[in-house]
Length: 142
Picture 1 (cartoon, helix red, strand yellow):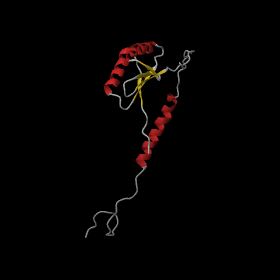
Picture 2 (cartoon, one colour):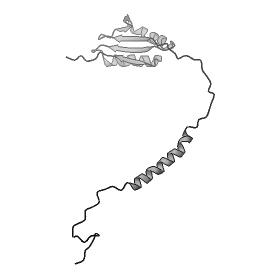
Picture 3 (tube, one colour):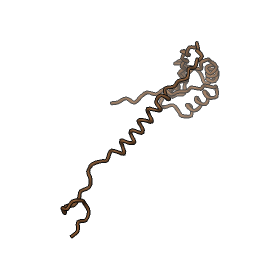
Picture 4 (cartoon, helix red, strand yellow):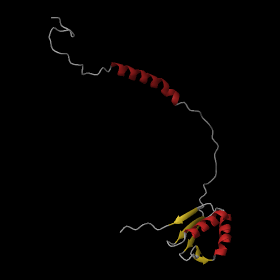
């Protein structure tokens, strides 16, 4: 009977080769190494430029903050000082004209009607207030 497959005369089955042929990988790595060696000096080339110098200082002035509070009955407080609804537009307009413009923090009672809050925000926007924030108390863990 004729032997099929393999070089030997034994009748054992041949196992697949368990080694990885690294020769193509080494060839590719050597080509990449040569490319990097050639291109590396080109990447370090710099152009000398005489840049202009500035003498300005960053603006360290922080804007003031205004706390506009409203309680459950609808009474308004400007930095904890009570005032009437008729003075609101003039106070907001005066605050919006200051340079830098102060930040307006809106603080409301839990029982305050949403319509009152919406009218305060609308009045601030109409007056030209750019920064409006809300003051809340965080939930307390028990």
